[in-house]
Length: 111
Length: 114
Image (cartoon, rainbow over all chains, first blue to last red; front, side, top):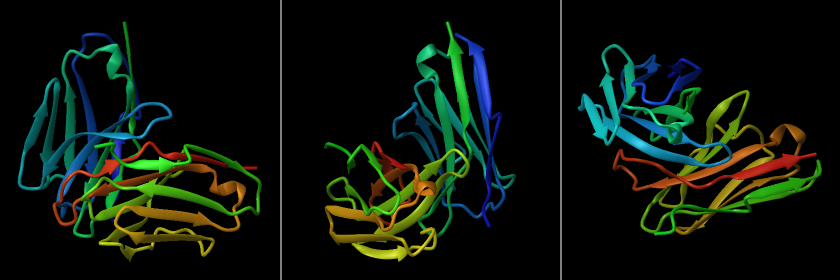
């Protein structure tokens, strides 16, 4: 059974810092891995999707990497801003169309 | 595109009442997913449809929960009778089947059962 873990559970940093959020999964037989952002009381916004054949994806200040064999992904946020404050979720998809979500990292960036 | 639309956004009901949550997927998407989010269990998949057909309902917690997709543009999740432990945020998501691509989430329905 696939299990997804995210570390740290919470993170508070000053503006301008570069951040690394970690995601690990137990079954390496995945089709893709997706990073989401969730603001309080809101839905999920897809940030990046990495197919199993890819090693990384970039969007603006965000970079996500995938090491399928070791069951790890990282989300790198460069030059963090207060507007980046949110909960970040990773999710993996196997061969069943199902997304299995991690528990999330709650990020606070203070001015 | 308006994105995935869910209604109502908030629902407060008394234990024992029937609750119906509604979802309109993104036009052209033929896979639809229902999720539940709680503090204790995080985000869990309840059921998903491909081309209006339920594929996997193993996440539906009890027989009190049922979901339908009568056409490509509408789905319902019904709880009858509702219980306080059903209180959660329910999300609907959609995507193109088989594309192994992004799922697009709706804003969610916050359900409170008293």
